[in-house]
Image (cartoon, rainbow, N blue to C red; front, side):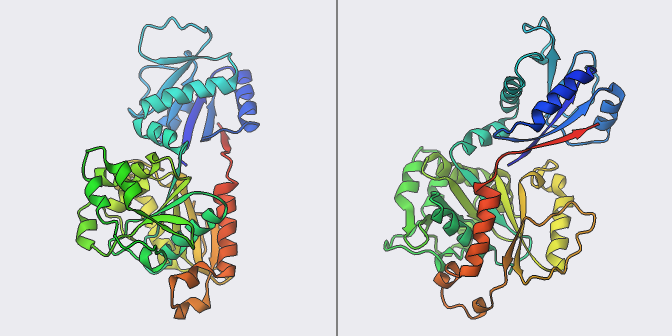
Length: 376
């Protein structure tokens, strides 16, 4: 879930302390990072430093129209009067209402102001979209994705597995008694006929062992390579709009072609798979360092990233040092998989399943949106 970075700027320190106290003791459906200022010069220095900001909630005495803020930053004034007398177009909110209601009002402004964030907020009420990605091949990305699906299903969650690899490997793990493939779904994703939802229902398959729905897509590399940004968005949101699923797990290639980039941007969370080696971590650092150039905005990935270390043997070879990268979960190396005969064997390894269940619990099922606070 994206972190929404909010500046609260007010020359009244008592008000800032009251606001910060409320934030520290409350939770919400979104994750916020609040940064507080009581000095206009410090605020301007922070802005000039190019820090990532989504919302500036500011008292009129500190606000000036000359503030150099990016166009996508929302400015809301903290007014002393419930009915603002301002004649300009700047949004306002009454500062002395209940702070929970104040934040709700501001977030309403934000979702109206930011179309993408608003769409994902509405969508998250119905389903959570999780992309499983790695900048390295051979790290067990699909193994993680399909096991994630099954462990979620075992917890009673309704799950759809969407494979967007150029050479899909989901057929190794999922099968159904039906013969007709699902490849036609891409044809309907390219159309604006209103038939997509009905075709998702008609073309999806159900795997009784994993208890997961999926598309049975034969290897059609040319078809996958032809998919465009809008078609990927239409397909992902079409599955969400069926209203059937709690989680949609997207299995991606280990490259940043158009399909992967669109899916990563459309996702609510990203499970980023690395192995216990310097090469995979080096690639991770390189992509995150170029995030703004690759995706158009800083922190668009970092804010929803969970790094999972796969094939872990209990000894870390990595020195993360002072990097911002943290490991959010560990999955074991399984010797038996070196001579694997079927996908079913990968889905029933007790040790791997136990560790995956811990990740599912701590990163998904237990996740309560917290609040981060920085005071300046």
